[in-house]
Length: 272
Image (cartoon, rainbow, N blue to C red; front, top):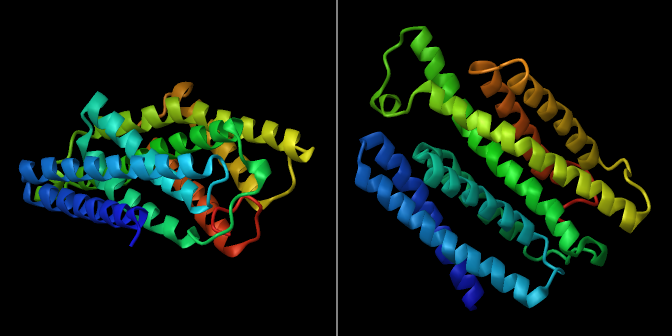
């Protein structure tokens, strides 16, 4: 077993334990389990960072396809740690830990894939991918917050009793705060990612659009995201409508990243 494989197994183990303990801690209202979950996930994140750095040092920009799925997993946790540190939103680990685990394991599916074409390499492409992945991380947090908001809002309005797990959740305004951050910071990042992709395509391929399914869906996502950005900042949307919109936008993004790769032919595939 190589050191790379050993580190990968350790990352999976730590992420898995982090996901299990955060749910156990939330259900049992055990603060120590929640702290243990964060410690396990942070340790896994550190090893994950070493793996990404090692692959970059070894291959330069000519990286295997699975690297980018792994980097998406890493970016999601980076966003979670920032929001946990800056805004004390620890409940977002309920979304971040399981999703990071699934994406990291999913990156192994493309492990044997051929390397990305030479034209796909370079720092400019890194800017394209980096800004998109950070926006996806923000949307993932808004997705998790939106699911919880929708459930709690429905139960409160119908005067249904809350279980112990739900009683431990923060106020509905806290979930809305996550949605606001995802929109205010995430939409500009997504726009930069999309625009740099168009510029890069024009330079490398001689055309901005090629009719690729992922391009079409990505543009559709931008329009929906722009609509939410407008409704949130200009029309003053709050609460349930904004939560539902974030859930749909993130779901479409995941379909674009995963579903299109499985069901259609695309030259943007990370799973070739």
